[in-house]
Length: 443
Image 1 (tube, rainbow, N blue to C red):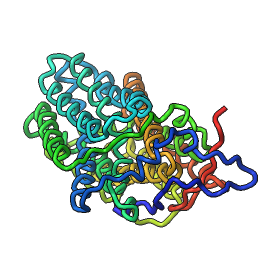
Image 2 (image 1 turned 135 degrees about the horizontal axis):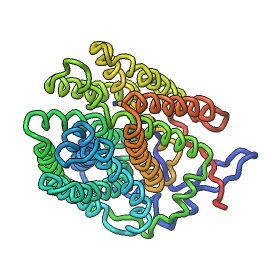
Image 3 (image 1 turned 180 degrees about the horizontal axis):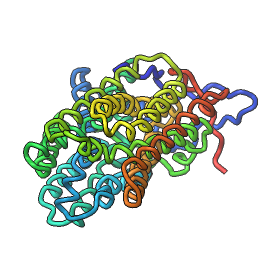
Image 4 (image 1 turned 90 degrees about the vertical axis):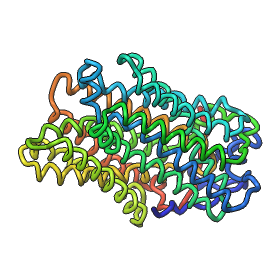
């Protein structure tokens, strides 16, 4: 994947803002030695050792995000095993998203000078525990408790993980380091669903979570060996600094787009297995193959998005518009397995580009406060995941899959319209690689 073309940021103040804007650098809201030291304070380790540590962060991102989306591919099996409706079973996706969205900014604000190595190890260890608890869950309530642990793991890692990749790399390689972590997030997003379904189809759904626990344990060992001590900020990132990120006009546009697009995606993707399973003649082996293809083309979408030289609003808006068309056509293709398969593959290709585009777009706007920016993004992203699962569960309880897909298509169209109109306004849509952004002081 082509790394985001992001310039290295130092402690020097940003260049003066235009006369019509208020110049109030976000780093002035941060404590001395705060978020900026998170970027520039790199441990004195050999380059090869640093890249092993960065790779361990990417692997950690993969197993954590994959665990979040793993139940999506086996939702019908979970509903049947625990004796709940398909709509109620969607809570296994809703709960971790909700917990991660709430916990991420609180973790950033409260961890203070905690060694980031310990925080990363704790999040991965928590993931191991949550997956093991899931495999032995006697009822749906215990399963939801296990998913709460996944949410805490997600919130902790998302809050600091992306910025740690930058800390570990040399200044001229910070973009590559960022891309490694983002690649793990993107891979987990698109492969968690098909891998879970594939293992479940052959060995049962408990085996899918047991495999996730083993993978997380292996990553935990890798991180314990490779990650150096990474001191945190000398003081906590204040909540008002996090609020200042939201106060930026351009940041708000990205966050609105995130809510619309991710809510629409999760509203529909939570039931992709049920949709494919309802197609006449779709066997379990074919379903596994289709979902795996969905994940693989998602990775291809991530790579393609990294090589298209367009402004982020145009790039994302175009993808969201195309996805709205695909989702709107799915109900009409249910009687044609070939058409349905083609549409689902196109869906995977477009969705696979979303993580890269949203993360890179956000990073381009908040280089002066990486942890605050990560916290804001994960909050809106994860709450949107929870919202999408909840809305999808509500709609399917009173309607059917067709209503879910039509509703998701409307949300994707709204996201595309927002990105292509508001996101392209003057002083609102930086071309990839530009970072200037005046920050208005919070009211």
